[in-house]
Length: 116
Image (cartoon, rainbow, N blue to C red; front, side, top):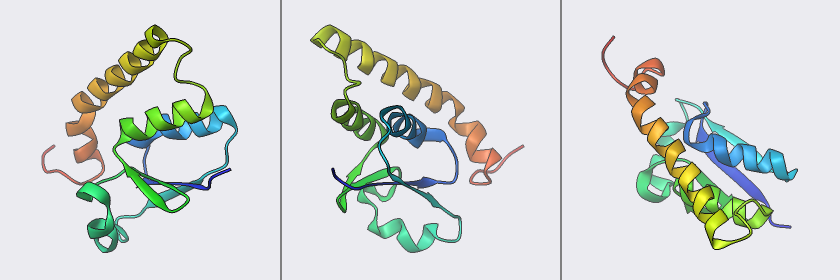
């Protein structure tokens, strides 16, 4: 079995679906929570300069939905037909829409944005 390390900031956000897939499948993984202090030192090493990143046997895979789709396929949650797979993608896209709408709030809440 491959070794998995999921790197993301210390919050749910874009990595939470992948964490849930690990839990649902019973697959062990390292849940690497990046602190504010650690962030500047690793930023340049990240693909596309952002998180989450899934490391599979040390090889990085960026982008939250690419990670979730990969894990869903690995763990048997990607659907049993093309139509079911399309519904899985639709749910992922709905989640992405939700996070996009909530991003301004979370940026302020975690101190990465300015405003009230």
